[in-house]
Length: 209
Image 1 (cartoon, rainbow, N blue to C red):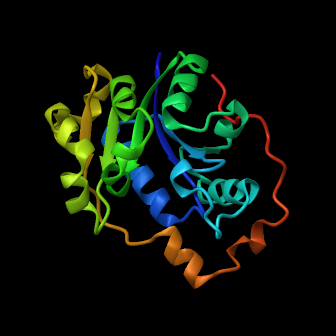
Image 2 (image 1 turned 30 degrees about the horizontal axis):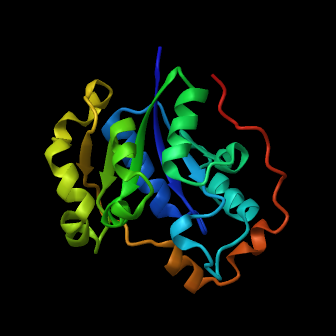
């Protein structure tokens, strides 16, 4: 039986309750078996960010935030040596043929999706669920990528049927807004990494078929 798996990529610098909240809501809305957090070794659109914590600390924060939930935080992108989402998706689909994946992203990412490498190929490869984020909906709906994707939009009340959709396919999901952001967390606690300075060494990918 195919495992229905949501995939949320990001820097998780650090992971916070907003990540957890939208992921759990997406799991319910899309009837997922679980979700994976892909902690990026380096976002190409954020290269050179001075406040980016080391991968090991960001991974540790993600694993701590994902505890006791059907969420798995992983550094698999670093181990697969994929830098761009289009390559990561292709590698995941090859490595886990018994899983059906759906890409999860916030509306802030939809607003800049047209800047992602081969973004149309991504949309033709995997269904996409966009989660509304406060302050970004106007930019997301006006974005160049949305101009192309709009014709492939599916009704939110059909979200649980995403495995049957013909690609490209996009669904917009709305949940109770959570204003939490990694930027605000860092501003409130610039030394947030102190609790993760001696993280457990990364293990093998924790998800088994």
